[in-house]
Length: 296
Image (cartoon, rainbow, N blue to C red; front, side, top):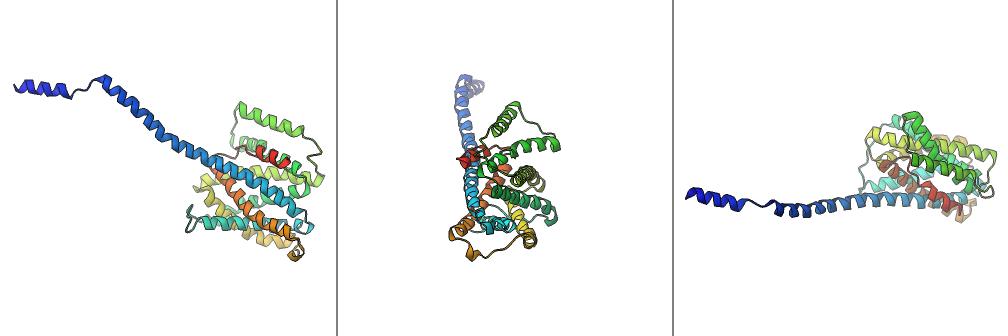
């Protein structure tokens, strides 16, 4: 009697395989749906960073061109870079404290940051000089060559290679630069020298950012906060030696407004650039959109 009852209970507890499989089939899509919002959110952040970088780059080019049309401000390149670094440091400091607290500020070794800050200053000053002494078209075409330079330096320094599709895309970009109308891209010997130095230093700087983020184990925002603050301090000692200071009361009001806005836009540009490199790599090709917008 006991054996019969036990066997009947055992039979009731057994669940047919065909009933289990539909349940598993229903559970699998649910797990995939849980992953989709995570992937979508990451892609939305990447797209937002690229959009912010593109908009701020285009805006800053035209603001800077307005500023450099003034011969007095054109002779204050280092002070101009200091202003952009100062705005970047202020924006990031505010973002790292109450009520925002978007990231936790950290203090990085001062001496180890000096070489990177030197390239940071060189990257900005050389690009500003390139814009000041070249047309917008030539300035943007020179910036396009930053990406092939990044590929070359990555291969030379780290042995990194790219796939055939990326190589083909870069080759078409370089070919397109060679076919550019000379009326759009006007330059001069001094401007061309600044342009070549600018894209080489920019490529080196962008690669170095990605390496330092890994070396220091920090986020892109944490690195930029340290870098911008130290760069202001370093340039404060250099500006009096090279800049020709002017009376800002003699500068037109619309130029002063452009100068103020350029600091805000530059901080957004620096932040978006660091976010893109921190989330992807220095080879992220977004300057093609910027170039088309700037030329037109």
